[in-house]
Image 1 (tube, one colour):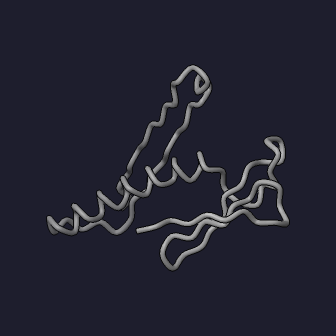
Image 2: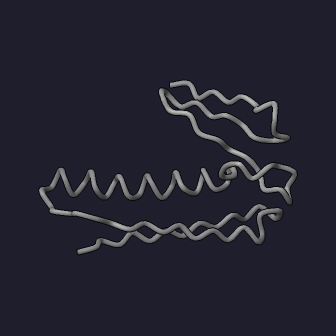
Length: 97
């Protein structure tokens, strides 16, 4: 699979991201020089981790015949030491009744 990105000419930093038939935006906040027209790359990365965890739980439950009607996944980011090489993500997956 190829993922293609293209800068949007009318915004200073925004990127159009094409993944298969889907298109979404990635951008930076106004404070970072962007136009805040979409999630940042860090937000997308963190969201991908959360989606991977949630989908893995649902896939496993389906495979094992475990009824799961809803789950909630939360990703907490601590990027306070990112410049030192530490980027911490903590995930929680909760099965809802």
